[in-house]
Length: 193
Image (cartoon, rainbow, N blue to C red; front, side, top):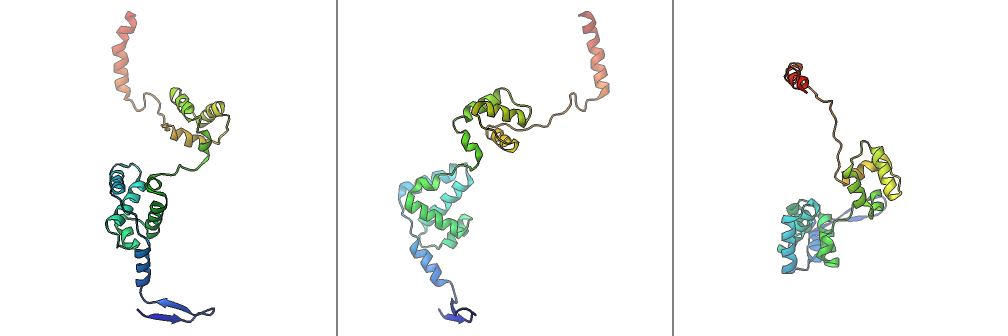
């Protein structure tokens, strides 16, 4: 290893030719606490979790547990993430335990104010679906007393499992010839009635 100085207007900065020292620091300082139970839980969660971020966290920690001498850069390449992500997962696991790694933070935003009302809002919106976002906003305001913009109302409706469907006129693109045949077949029944 050789240290090279470069001239800078403010100061002389030493540069290290290769990143060997940094690799040694990252490999030796970041040691993960290994336990068989934690590894088994990480493996189970990496296969069964529906959240992609949880699976990625599990892969990063499992690779560090199985190969503790690998650098964070190599682990990041294995897990498909960044070195900082691997470092933060290792620190989080070492300091707070496996539950902190497997926990997903709630989505930030205004609908958090509706925590106690979401079940009632969801059942009311599903029982009689609103025709517009403004109608849904009125329902939410009646239940919770909170007024939301139409954008947030659509977000709340989406979280309740509702979606917008584009309507078409009935019968849509029906063939006029088949309609006339149907009317002529139906005419004797109508006359009899």
